[in-house]
Image (tube, rainbow, N blue to C red; front, side):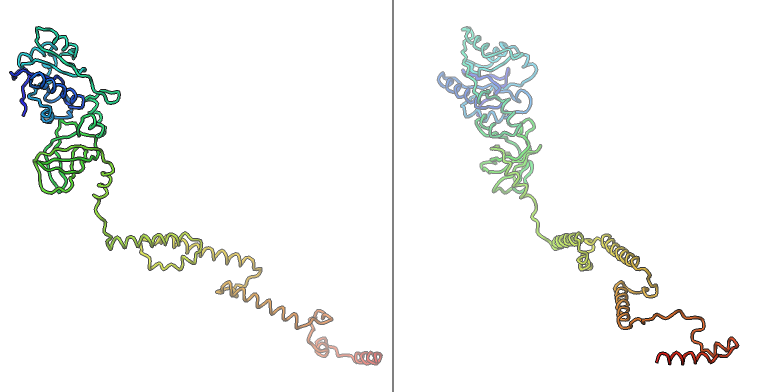
Length: 420
């Protein structure tokens, strides 16, 4: 376990090489610097020390102070100088900062990246360090290391934070040189789902679903992490209760497809109950009823047994309107038939249907035609009958008070003889 020396308080007596920087992200640029520093410390017989800010320089951190301590041990670091980023420290002049380090530590050499800045107003640069170390009176030497690029952009903690906030886990891991991880306390265990008490000062990936690998004690589990303000981890082949224990979560990549699958699988399985089956049946009957009501053939509507259809599926208003429409149509038809008849017989039509009326008219027409064919008209049409029609001559005479005269018979006899 490496030693922690507080800035301007603790001391380190063994000759050392001190690496200066923020080291919040401990990315591949920092790794290159630490590898060269480890080599130089070994060649020159020096202990390797690293400067660290306890809580970063403000804002969310990629790695906590404890996580960075654990990562530095692999570079054979012997101690760290722990610095609180207070207003007093920010106002310290560059050369005053170097003087404090040398008063408390046995510094023989410095190393940093070319972009390193320090002191009030960030006025201290790598060139400032170089000039300071070239002064023989100070008795130290300095080496800078070139920046590491990702494409045309310099690898930096700021860039990595931006990638994490956008959910670009794979790209952030590439620049970190390892999987982005967080060590946190388990809040609650529910089956294979674990609620995490995520550190407040730790940056979290963008809300979403991620493939993760988790370590609890000596056991490792694969799973997924749902980030949505809170963080919940679902582990494969996990059982037990780990409430209050430490868990390390490594974010491997975003996994949207896994999220969709889990959302579907989280839905309860639907077993078809009798009530649901009845609802499906009612829906089918309602569809059939709609088709029947929309057809132009009215007899089909009459053939549907309304009593067999569930009450909620029958539109009684539509059925009533259809029946009323049929009654009105029949009345209009009867009225038009009555107008076409010149002299309708009230006694004959009363209580009779249109069919019966039509049959009666056909029968009467047929009888008239038969009468005209069987009774020929007389050749001489009779003259109009007078008021005395049907009376004998005697009766006529008696009424007038006169007797019938004989010459009438003579006239008939003479007439008959002449004709013979």
